[in-house]
Image 1 (cartoon, rainbow, N blue to C red):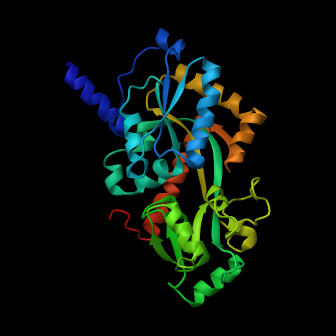
Image 2 (cartoon, rainbow, N blue to C red):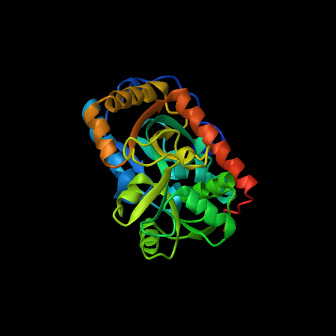
Image 3 (cartoon, rainbow, N blue to C red):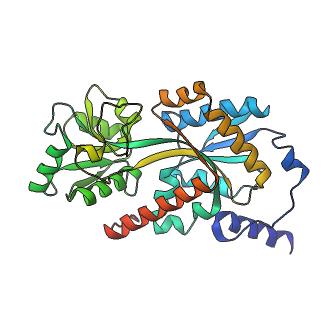
Length: 329
């Protein structure tokens, strides 16, 4: 195999079209990391996800005696950062801080899956936290309970609006799952970001937002939570009922964040990272830093993380099919 063929095979492999050539464990794997590590975040700087990535980099650096550099590469809903990591050499020096949106939801678009299959191109090192989605409405508005919302929506199909950060976004699919389980028809209104949605909700121009707790906290004096889409009440905001308690059993929808490596990264490297992350997430001070941003510590690694991600991808695929959603626009 000549150099050009080898490189082409490597790029195709990292995008889920094969695998890098199998190689034995090398001394540099055992000495990992021997130089700075790039931690790529596929969104812009700022916000709860970026903060979680920076906390992670802060705790890994001292454990390994190397710098973990947070590198924000935003664009295309997270696809740019994902592809950059997937195309990098699988040696542990380019890692992705990945979340549910880019990993399991964005690829529901056929146009994205043609470019990258994250489930094949990336291997989870560990998931670090979960953030339950919440149903947000305006304080003092028409809806004070989830029952109010469902009852009005059933009698006025298509008149209750919900905002999202775009077609095929995590907010969009959370709303579609809610509609399916509650037996209602809400009108989807896509926006270009959380800020405009919050503004329009406060102004009464959009009724509902399926978002994360950190998004609600930004304007908690003007907005309120009707229910949390989780099995249990949130440790961050235990005053709010679960969706099941509020009348919609089965409505569970979590965002999450964790570290991913290019597929084929050697096990000695993966193991070192997993062990360091598990040790960090058992530290009460680190856990509190995650909680302060609204992210609930929830460490899962190895086969468990892989299994949960695969199951979530299948669940989203079924939802898109059953709701007959066209996410490629």
